Amino acid sequence: MAKQKHLWEIDHPYYRTEGCYFSNECHQEHESFDSFLEEWKDSDLDYNWLIRWDWIDKSKSENRSDDDDTQDVLEIQFFIQRKAYPLSVDVKVDRKDEDRVRAWLQKYVKYMVKMWQPFLEAK
Image (tube, helix red, strand yellow):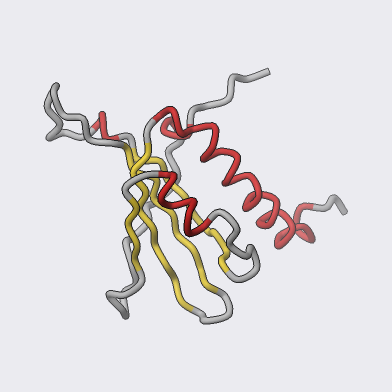
C-alpha cells in the first residue's frame, strides 16, 4: 500500500486565482485554521461547493530566509451555487493542522463524488 502524501506534497494541475475577475469582494483571509473553522465549520455543502484546495508550502518560497516563520497557506476555492459567484479563501496553517484540515476536506470529497457519481459507475 502506498504511503499517503502530506497535503503540502500534493501538486495540483494549474493554479487557483484569488478572488473573482469581476469583483474585488470575493476573497477572505484567516490567520489560523481555528479562525477559519469558526466561520466555515458547519457550512452547507450544497450552498458552498468546494471546488479546489491547495496547501502552499511556504518553505519552498524563493525569498524565504532561514529565520522566516511564515506559515503555510491553505488556498480554497468555493463556488457559492445559490448566488452564482466564486469565493477564494486563504487560511494560514501549520503542519500540525494537517489532520484537522484533511478531516474537514473529507466531507467535500464525498460531495464531489456524489455530484459526479454517474460518470464513476462502471457500465
